[in-house]
Image 1 (cartoon, one colour):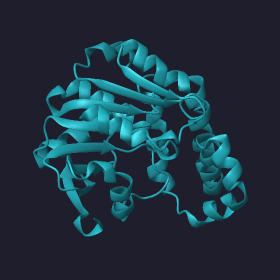
Image 2 (cartoon, one colour):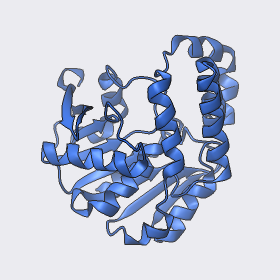
Image 3 (cartoon, one colour):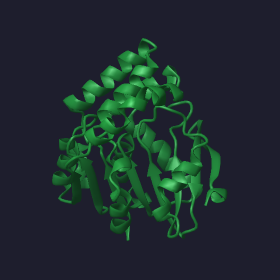
Length: 264
């Protein structure tokens, strides 16, 4: 598996974008990850393992955010970067997964470039700002501006993990925080602020492709209600994990299986 992982840098809209790809299937699957605290470069092997259920049927493409970031750095502009990267690689009619901030970007992609998206899976995301995400993001921005990067990583872990996972890992959390090298503030801050620019709720019904929504009822980053309101607005298939928070995409064992079955 790992020897088939490819990392390449694409020239996209006056910038460079890292693309990680793997898998041997004929169909394209595009994954847009959420707001990252650490660099994506060098994570291809872990991504291939995470997406292993897809790799027989799909070639999977993961897109990082462009460098330098678009100006203004908004969800819509980042979606245009993804669209440009897909066009450059000849990817059309793809199945698309967007998680957290990636789900915000994926909504804009489906709205503005419908020919690129066959089916859309949205995980633990939102379509408009709410009190939960505003409090989380504002807190991370304040911590990062003070240079308290360890505090950002710890706060994310405490908000995003389920209570069961947090209890199990609480003793080793300080060490895990210390081992992570966070993105530099000049990159993290505009990406974090962009989360508050998402505003697709009133346009959701213009999405024409089939959509699956997965969320965590106890989500302390975007809120569980945010996932539910997307599903209700679209009248689409959805599942809300009752005991999960924002990391449902990592903790729920059937998360990728639900997406795989929906795409098939």
